[in-house]
Amino acid sequence: MKDIVGVILAAGEGTRMKSAVPKVLHNLWGMPVLLHTIRALKCAGIDRIIVVVGYKSERIKEHLKGFEIVTQKELLGTADALYRTRKALFGFDGTVLVVCADAPLIKTDTILKLIHMHRDEQAACSLLSAELRDPTGYGRIIRNDEGEVVRIVEENDASIYQRVVPEVNSGAYCFDSKKLFAALDEIMLRPKRGEYYLTDTIDFFKRHKDKVVAHATDDPSEIIGINSRNDLALAHDILRKRIIEEIISGGVTVIDPGTTFISSNVTIGQDTIIYPFVFIEADVNIGKNCSVGPFCRIRSSTTIEDDTRIGNFVEITRSHIKRGTKINHFSYLGDAAVGSKVNIGAGTITANYNGKSKNKTFIGNDAFIGSGTILIAPVRIGDYATTGAGCVVPKGKDIPKGSVAIGVPARILKKSKRSHSK
Ligand code: UD1
Ligand code: MG
Image 1 (cartoon, rainbow, N blue to C red):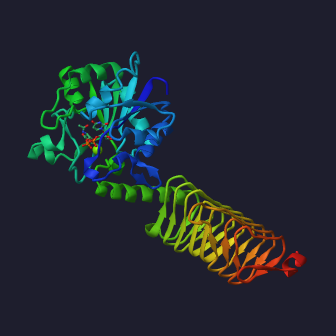
Image 2: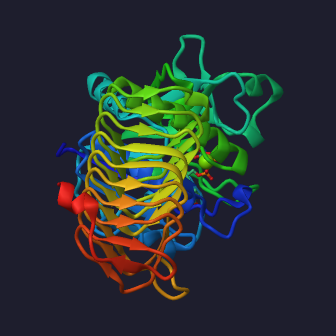
Image 3: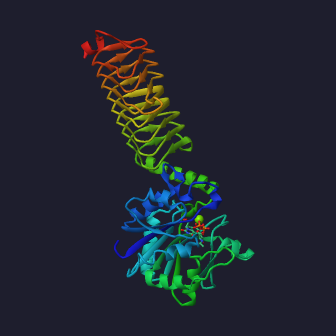
């Protein structure tokens, strides 16, 4: 979309989080809060996105490679944060879509609806609202007798009558760029808080007879602002359910959604079954017709190909498992490349960390790893090779194709029945 610029306000300190980490960098199912918000805008087709940073900006910028960044030096509130984009947006004539970085659950569809309403209504400002059972902490939308939005009142400034208003401000708005900066010029400092409120632009527009409209989302959970650890826990819960619904709708059986934890950026193929108490971290791809769990943890940067069985008490990280392999009981595989149709016996461990560095384990196709094998990486097990139960394969050892290794440390038997039979 050419005539629209997205602005993400991410400069705030987030004192209510009680954290040394800026609140927008807190992890939410495998991604910083801020990146969820950015993703929603990108998916809505918004090509130009400006992020306003301030508190611990250097740390935030590390996550924003390739983005247009504006710095708010003094944290003087949301209106001031947006005002900092003035130079970057000089000469721009169109829609400024503003979202708060601390509201990561906003949906792409909702952003698109807001943009369409803004265009249809030709408003100075169109904002996204929601009706909450408990509106505590949010700005309340105040409407006149005709139902028009006339003002937003923040929690601290609200009267007891205004506090019971269930309709709240999500912090997402579309503004007409020219009218926006005219309004920001006029916003007054709120002396009690020492901040300029972006919400005060509404009052300004109404006084200047400019149109303000609100679109109420039908899913209030998407406007959750992450201001405290409780909010973060709530966001985890909401997003977890959303992710699982999406995975299920792709043809995956999830036996117990209540005990299944799947992060963002996970793909799972059709007809795979996820058993209870499974935790899957970000950037994991699982193929079709697999079974995973119960009680296992698949960590980041792992690919599991089709027809694979991952059983109970198995942990896998940074590994690639080819199709048809079975890892059924009590195993740890880290930094491993495992071939197809491999059997990993119960209790197999890759000792991938020597205290200084992580090392790789390679296991060839059709290998048979006996129960309780310890593979001290870097190590290589050839195709069709077998390790006996309790075998310890020392680092640097290469178990040749088709051979059998037994004992501690592993010694290679000359012949392998398995290789002959293949
Ligand atoms: C804000 C809104 C409130 C709305 C709520 C929705 C105002 C005055 N209030 O309140 O009406 O219901 O969001 O979640 O806007 N930020 C900056 N610079 C600053 C201050 C904040 O960039 O100087 C950023 C923060 O990083 C955050 C966003 O703006 O991402 C909102 O700030 P926050 O302090 O969380 O405002 P709320 O109290 O939640
Ligand atoms: Mg907030």
